[in-house]
Image 1 (cartoon, helix red, strand yellow):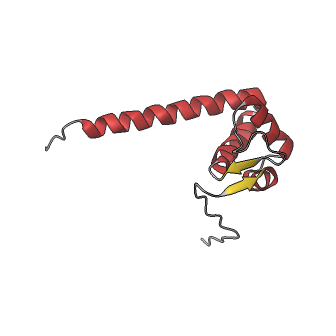
Image 2: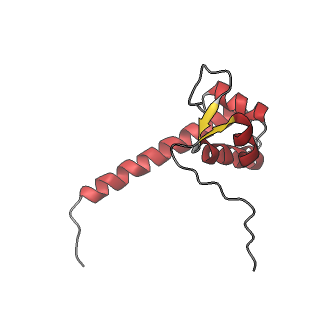
Length: 108
């Protein structure tokens, strides 16, 4: 099996992307991304600016939204609900891991 890499983008916390760049990297259209922003599923780093910019981590969120839209044929509100629930599950899993780390370890 041969794996071919055509493009690599380093998604660090300081990198910002335009709406067009997020669309190109996520598989969603600019209109779909705008719908997600309007519904609150995606948040630009500069909400009042003429050109919206997004933190690089929004690409991961947008790709997840793209897969959900494709796999389950969700509209913008359905995507927003699904993304909100997924984020909540991730938060709860992180809290659970933190609590488990505080427990004394058993040696078997």
